[in-house]
Length: 600
Image (cartoon, rainbow, N blue to C red):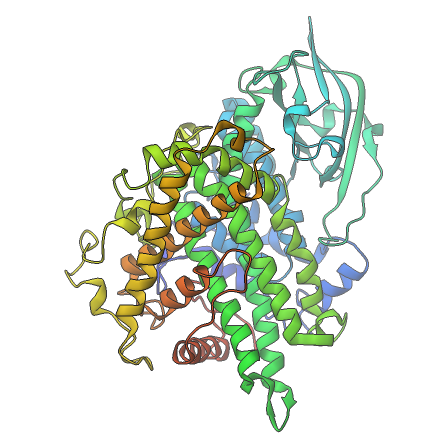
């Protein structure tokens, strides 16, 4: 049923971040650069040109049993750790994001609602469908209302025999190919938080003529977008997920998981974009040397590499928080969606400037880049746009300032130890509103002498750039960068505690939105620092060194909206050497540093 046999083991790499199935999946998909590989970039691009799903890839994922990654172990699947799921899906996204979204993630987006609030019967049926390589679509939004799900007009009116469905859902991934769907509908004509419900509908129980025409898209061309229209169609009352009127609550809880882990999967796109660009500039000669020897080119590559590590470090902490700190998870989920999506898009754009005319070629060795550049864009909108997440953070700033910043107990060490065990996903413990509770930022105020629990007692400032081309000034500079973000948090606390109610609405001034941006940077900086502190005895020569942390904090410390901070030359050279070494050893560029089947 679920394809690959699961041993229950994790392949612990340098940071302990690689689950056992990633290697098997990478080997099944093979070398993407091999033109003879039926699952390689050449065939993926052919399907993209036809604007069709990559069917050979779908069959390969069927054989692997990818859907089992979306089903909790209690229902026969392999979902025990969300960070494992992210790493498995990065292997798919780095080849073909359309395959990642169109084959599996759209089903995961739907299924999370069932694991969160569904009945036992609904969960068992969803597991049966997924483990049989079926699909479940999710229909939240309606184009007329954008991201405002409170205005969803699709109606499920109560009748003596159940519900009567009326309305349209458009631009829904896999709606025509799915065996079932999760659909948000109005079940109470009165406005309010209990006006909508989620429904779990099977395609076999709906009329055959329900489908609307296919909606073509610029990016993610292999994802089949369609819609349905139902008029006076009766369904049983037990299609409701959870209690009637619970739709918004379930949706917002599910968003905490999907905003975090799905955006984290998109880092696989930057891995391939960076790999493609690096390969090109090392082979291309300009002015009597390779393009990779040019300082400006090297700077862009190292910047993208640093951004990738930064995004993965922050996403890792946010993903672990879903297991370990579910009350706070909503804050981190909004910050991940806001920060990681923008950072990935910006990094891909900067890499395109290095490729120049080659970035938009649709054939040749760099052709995959133009597809990835298009496919990364949905990271910023999807089922919730970045602007929505920013506004949601703005509305929580005063409460966070009063209840958490500088007051909360620092987050536990387990939140940052990437190889540490995790409890099962607490779907039943997620909350809609964090109530001003957040502990990650407070780690910045703990001081440089704070030693992680269970560490060997060495201070942070005993770990400099020595031995990796450093000049002996690494500890002082690192301490200065950490203090910069601690000062930022102190200033944000002073400003945000007294924000007037008028600045917590959609009419908030741009300067107030900028406060949310600054706060997110503080969160990211805290996450990067703690990931390094708690994993610095890793076998990975880069991650055990504060060099990558210094690079990350330097770029984060730049004024919001400006060009990321320039790195010192010796830091840049060391980071570039590590990047090229990973490339030559066919290792992934992210935190996991896992082996890849790539030939070059």
